[in-house]
Picture 1 (cartoon, rainbow, N blue to C red):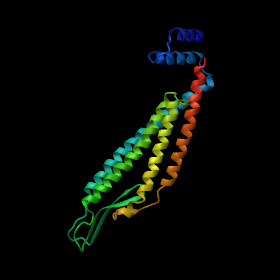
Picture 2 (picture 1 turned 60 degrees about the vertical axis):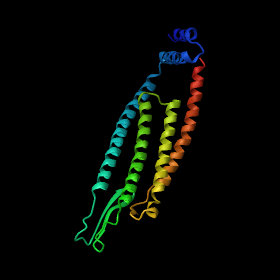
Picture 3 (picture 1 turned 90 degrees about the vertical axis):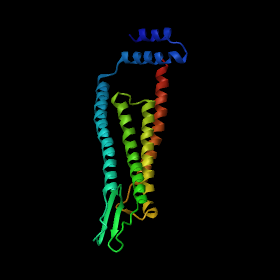
Picture 4 (picture 1 turned 135 degrees about the horizontal axis):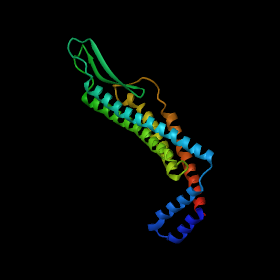
Length: 227
C-alpha cells in the first residue's frame, strides 16, 4: 500500500506550487498507511482527550473574561455615592490587585471627588486588562485545538506555543504597567502585589522554548520529506 501511494506521488506530482498541496496529501496518506504502534495510538488518543477537556476549560475562561468585563463596567457606571447628608462615602472597584475609587463624596464639600474623566480612565484599564487576559486564553485555546486534532509536534503548533508565550509577556507587561497607576491616578490604590515580573519571565521562557520546538519540527518535516 505504501509503495503504491509513493509511486502515485512520483508520477502525478509536479514541482509547481499548484500541485504542492496534492503532494502533501499523498505524503501524509503514505505515512498513515504505515500506521503507528498500538501504544502510541493510545498515547495520542489520551492527548486528544485531555486537550479537548482543557479546551472546554479555556472556553469557560473566555466566557468569564467577557462576563467579568461587563459586570465591572456596569459597576463602574452605576456605583455612585449620595451627595446630601453624607459624612463620607466611598465606592471602590477591585481589579487585578488594584482598587480604583469610582465615587468619593465628603460631607464637607458635598460633591463627588471622582470625575467622569477618571472613570473613563478606569474603564480603559478594564478593557485593556480583560483584553490581555482574553488573548492568553484564546491563544491557549487555539494550541489545544491543534493538540486535540493530533497535530502535536508541528511547526504550526510551535508557532502557537510562541503566541502563548507572547501573550504571557503582554500580561506581565500589563501587570508591571498597572503598578504605576497609583502614581498617575489619585483614585488608584494597591490591594496586593502583582506577579508581573514573574509572568513576564515565564512568557519569555515559553517564547524561547517555542523557537527550539519550531526548529526541531522543521528538521523533522524535512527529514520525513526524504522518502
